[in-house]
Image 1 (cartoon, rainbow, N blue to C red):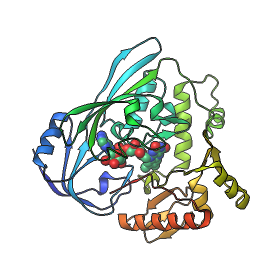
Image 2 (cartoon, rainbow, N blue to C red; image 1 turned 180 degrees about the vertical axis):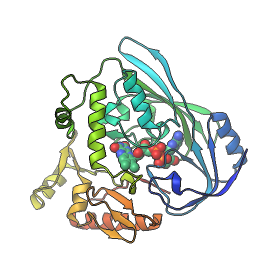
Image 3 (cartoon, rainbow, N blue to C red; image 1 turned 90 degrees about the vertical axis):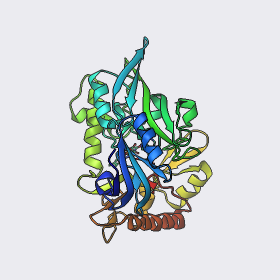
Image 4 (cartoon, rainbow, N blue to C red; image 1 turned 45 degrees about the horizontal axis):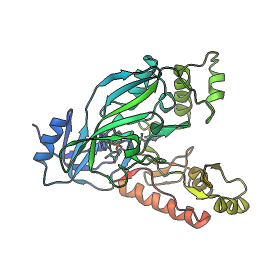
Length: 336
Ligand SMILES: Cc1cc2nc3c(=O)[nH]c(=O)nc-3n(C[C@H](O)[C@H](O)[C@H](O)COP(=O)(O)OP(=O)(O)OC[C@H]3O[C@@H](n4cnc5c(N)ncnc54)[C@H](O)[C@@H]3O)c2cc1C
């Protein structure tokens, strides 16, 4: 097995941060992963997917292992559903297109999210009113410590808003090797979120289909979100914070235009992007680190920014939002 030392990670993270890994390898099966863990047993291990939700703030003094386990397999079906097992190293969007080609419904609203299938449960990816949680059946994950494969059901994963047990109690303890989704034979459409209806009208869609919804989502995302191939970024840098209704009402008195979405259980989700914009960060640039000119929630690397510079900018943003609104933002991107 070839050992890669002092390995450049710039093309392995969508922030395009020029960090290095002490060791780097990829694995295409749980068996190869096990071998690698034996070889690098003295070092910390970081499991890498598509690198679209991470910020390297320094070189990684351990072994970065890139998950390349492939395969899409229809496991079984019942009257309403198909159960599809997907290798963690499959590209998420290509998998969504595969589902659409097979008329398997449920993930069309999650079109064009970068990254790999194996990372999708980590932060319970979500967009346009749908989360992975809605279609998740189970997953298999290799425990880095006991070197055994464990199965996690939906309940085991403790999914929340951009969160799961893998970002909390089991952080960095498992390598997810496959994810099984429960997809519908007959779609239930979710078109009431964002500008999907308007986009479908613009497209002249008469008969709604999962293909049309997927295309509408692709069109909206392509027009709104910066493409990491053109400007390096990792999507939304911060989560939208949830606050108690009383806190929201007090904020609404002081800031009548505040953008918010009511949630169940007496809480309200505030639009972090709006608050960041109100603090004057939208379009801000310091060196090569910046806050995107159209999407204040997205931090960008215009070329040679270091991870530390991007992180420091995120810190300044956090502090100013706290000062102006009394709200603590939380980073969505994984800081390494
Ligand atoms: C332009 C853009 C738009 C985005 N839009 C959205 C969006 O709409 N909704 C959304 O939810 N996210 C969005 N994201 C964030 C990102 O695409 C998702 O979080 C995605 O799931 C990350 O996948 P990845 O393979 O790139 O993970 P990576 O960045 O490689 O890893 C992320 C974390 O998951 C861990 N990890 C990765 N693979 C595994 C594995 N197999 N086993 C164990 N741990 C693993 C890593 O260790 C790391 O902690 C966006 C990102 C970009 C750049």
